Length: 498
Image (cartoon, rainbow, N blue to C red):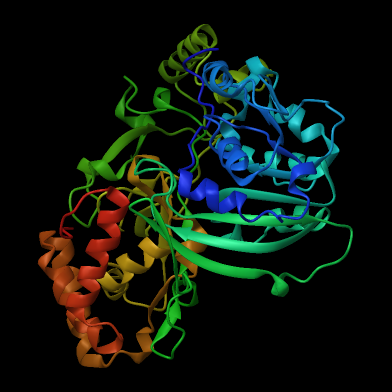
């Protein structure tokens, strides 16, 4: 097995494993056949054994993990394990129970598993996956496959990211409804899989049945995982106050993604004359402060179908094409060329990128940045409004209250990164501009301008102090709350500094 392949492995703590196994019904457990389709280090199998289950089956694709586990447990009673892929296995067995922590592999990376016979195209051809969105991560495929091999009234207990509950389309629930119903949902806040993995997760207990069900009958509980302990807490609320002082960001703004170029570094800073370029903001790392400048941008090779490329540009494109075909990277462009499409067959129009931009992946500090003139790449959201002064909007976004709410709404990823979808921004609660008195509006506009001019984070303090009048949480409390939640995500203990 190649060491370069990401198998999406994150390992379950024992306290979580024991909790999940305890969700199974105790009735006739000695005769129940239980499956873990991706057993990894075998933590669930160990919990099952300790709970008194004896008829246990397991799949594990990682040969090294498989050898280590079976060396210790291979002779246990009625335990049968297989060092092979679960998704395309045609075993005709059906199970009373399934427990699992499926791999976390984004849909763009599924084809990396091709040496195991797993590709996105092959998965999409199977009928059991027909309701899944093409952007579904691989854990969704594991869940539906597991449901398909459960006996009637069988039980599936699975731990997974909680992003599905925030998905406004919810293909997942549609798929589940074909097989059964969710009996229990447990939302867990905290670094369940360590500081460098997903933070906010859910555990589902699903019963396979042909009967109709009502999601409102599902039992929902909330927990926090900290110091290897699982403690029940009050509801985790991803939506902030609904009082008259607040509104959703989408009520006053229009939010869109930046420009999708479809191309990589060949089209940035190419050794060509200046006439072929447009300035594009590519990365937040290049932006100092709260406003884009020419220093923030890269030169993007700007082509249009309505204009003919110069001989110098045409020659450069052919050289780039030959290089891509030679090294077969980047894969998306290589496949594009191999399929015989014109090179290059695209154009970038004068898309309006003016507004306040925000990078959807955050690590250390959030910033909403004013952009008045440049193209912006699609790793940014562009927020604009013809109903609010741009500096007032900048102030309503750059403050501790907004940062804290975004920490709550975002999805934590590896490397302590926080990802925010367009939907998260659209539903973000901000102070309703109509509820702010004119004196405070003037101060907020001026502080927004000062923030752009000086980049001094002292103005974030000043903005937050004004907004305190319209919030239920005090200034020092929200600043401390932000520091705490950010430190938990980053895995360090420090005060908030913008």
